Image 1: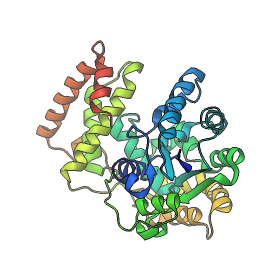
Image 2: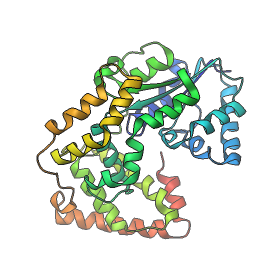
Image 3: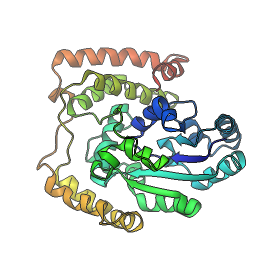
Image 4: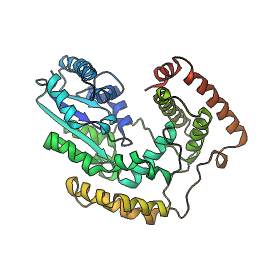
Length: 337
């Protein structure tokens, strides 16, 4: 029986992939049991569905009952979308006596940095086709980046067991998110760790991904998740090539819009969880740090004609695979983490 359960809730684009890779490969050496699966997104996705919830949480409980590690971690950034009350019910039903203690942790990135990272991810996987300015008009962007009410729901259900930590290298234990997370879980700094990074793509990679998804074109709804899986795999391949990248940056007008949209949320989140108002300070600093004019993400501005022809060819081929009977399921199985 495990000693303590830690639920790592995300957020998206706050080092979750690196943490999950580390837990899978090195967690047991630190006394942390990490149940099977690269991440535990199926648990988060099952919460609104009683039968699926019973299955997934029952299997997870069986895994943890067989471990005598001092700590166990369930990790999925997909909990960002979950109802805390559903999670509390699932834990009470399936893991009532398996832990001495339970804690929950969510990392939060300052709004300007989060906006850029989330846009890059959405563009990479093909879930958003618009430009950087238009991302702020996408309804789910504001909903997901309005932190205070979402975190308040978690606090209301789990009380002092729920913790929010700032995603900022200068605030991490040892300047490393892995050391910071391990220190939170175990109470001991494990020292320098090997980081398997999942960096945000730069302009050149984003241009390539946009050309790729443009070639794939519109897909039926049932193929959407396979497109996202394919986009994540494309991102991993581009990272492995270690290509030279121009960082994605805000421009001044957009930075000012972000201040207007999120300044109340930054202040409320700071007041609830942080000293010295780091979210408010990062947001207020954004316009002065921004570019004067927007950057171009058009493939034609970053790729030569031969590269565009090649990526269009591969995008067309992948479209045929994705719309073929059973094709999207095969792509998801082949390329998922």
